[in-house]
Length: 231
Image (cartoon, rainbow, N blue to C red; front, side, top):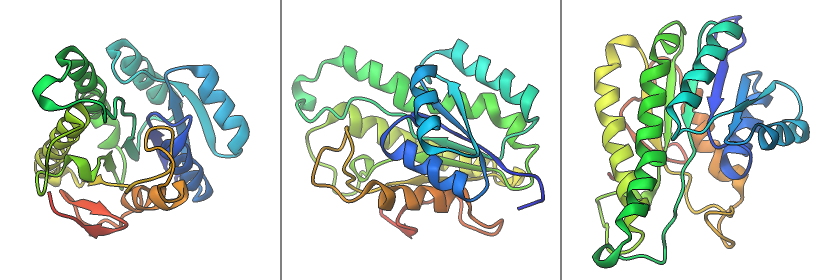
């Protein structure tokens, strides 16, 4: 990295994996905009974690919120080095595709697919100002078509769509030197994942790895713990 302290945005970062990713990046001397739908929740997480963290309000499903954050980053930083699309909702273990609540599925797409997509479109000019731009889409093995079965229809379909978006963007942004990858953190013990998973710090490491890839690192890949997994 250059002498400029790199700047990162982490969405959905007031708890769980996003919070731990923010902590790990801040420990690597990144300035991290730790975002949450509530500024108060973002501030509480920053107060707990300490240096190199900036609280910011962001609802990825609210276009006005995305624009407001963009304007702030333009004014305060002038560029963006890393965008980590972590925010996600509705791990719908109680649903099946044959009888899913399609309104809830639409709501899930708004946050899990259209939210990251709009963030990427909005922040692309700032990412292009970075010498080492990275986009990390936090996905899930549940979104892999390889071995996909029934259950969790909203969550699995949105993650499969996010994987497809990752491949498209990686190809389109290759000439801009922007590395775009999808990362599965594995089954992690969080509010969404439930108890029994591995430590949050372990799941976050692979995301931070993708954020800090060297310029000759991979793009358009699907990884868990730094190793490729099947789409």
